[in-house]
Image 1 (cartoon, helix red, strand yellow):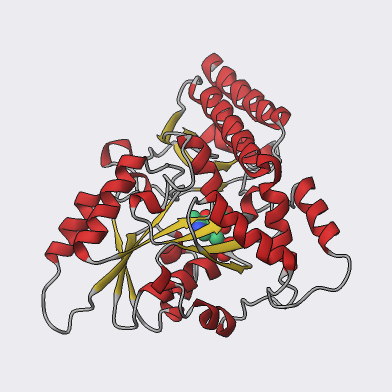
Image 2 (cartoon, rainbow, N blue to C red):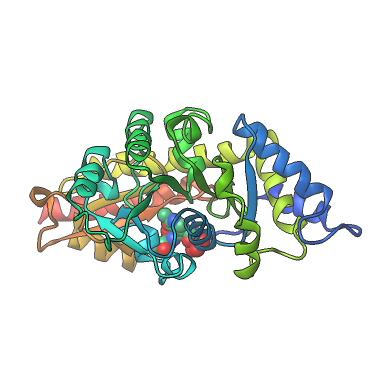
Length: 358
Ligand SMILES: Cc1ncc(COP(=O)(O)O)c(C=O)c1O
Ligand SMILES: C[C@@H](O)[C@H](N)C(=O)O
């Protein structure tokens, strides 16, 4: 029972089928093929406006290249201090921004507020040599499994406009956030001021497919060159676009995300009914962050449930993890079986019963 990440499963059947179908015959390389053209047009339909789309192989590449188009080498990009771009990309964003800096701010649940970012920006010294803030990057879904509501995104977008920042969204789990809010892709992005999006497909059914979706045309100008320099212009480009073709067909992508979110909620609700179990952050997408008794943590691991501990950095002081507790991260994917969720709950319940009997 592997709940370590949504990166642990392969692709879903429709995506693999689309890939297999696209394999036949000769097609133009480097994105010149008909499938790539078709899928780029599909992105324009999905986002209800003309967009530029660049296919890449990893979320890190999407984030680093997206930010490189928005932030000059002397600039600053504001993000959360636990953002994937600051914590998990080994300096790729700074590297591709040619030395620009990431400024990580605190925030409960790895989320930022417009007020908090604005206060930070106002606090910066206005020295002429100060690195000027040029972008804001948020993760939707956040690194603590939380989803920004449309009002929060609107306020952040407005704040970016007021401060002249480009607004980037790390949408590694875009579909999970989308179905959680029940809104449209346009409402969750450009209609709230998002300028450039890292659109993730890999964690939700694709084999290896991410896209940079650009809403602000001037940010797209050099992205082809930047992607080429990063080794992200794939020679057999159809192999990424075909994945997205299968991903988008028959609303498959949203069905995958709804499945993952539903089982995450089932897991979360089952765990929180047990004594000594509380949530670090509400379950709003496909990740569950329970704080559980240490004995339960040990039992789950001994029973072969795979998951990672999580940092409590974004927990309010009053909710910090106790000496006999463990904060863990359980990630549910489109391929997670409901029976495995029930198995985890059964183990947790048995531990709780034993502890109650002691
Ligand atoms: C919030 C977030 N952004 C981006 C990524 C993409 O990272 P990768 O380069 O591993 O595809 C991940 C993890 O997979 C993530 O959790
Ligand atoms: C932890 C993080 O780097 C990874 N992207 C995951 O979500 O599993």
